[in-house]
Image (cartoon, rainbow, N blue to C red):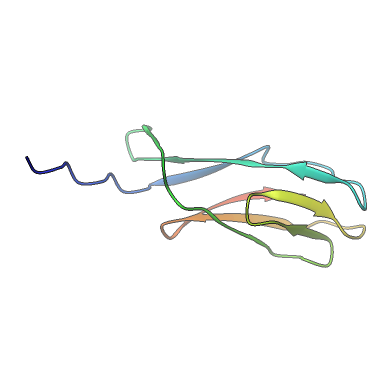
Amino acid sequence: VVPAPRAAVARVEVAPDTATVAIGATRALSVTARAADGTVLTDRRVAWSSGGPTVASVSAVGVVRGEAAGSAQILAEVEGVVGRATI
């Protein structure tokens, strides 16, 4: 039996897509990867990063920490497709 090929990631959704995090506080974000037909794809590796780590840092599991006043983009990348949240 030949296993079916894995569906490609077409869209990455980060929730919430906007949030306020006080300095020193944390907030967990979640990510959903979807195929082109909208099917939720499970068991995919997520790489988190912050576009403004002096304002908001993010852990390897998507927990954001407020570092300073301002706004930052938090990025979640799954197989080359990026979803964003604004903190």
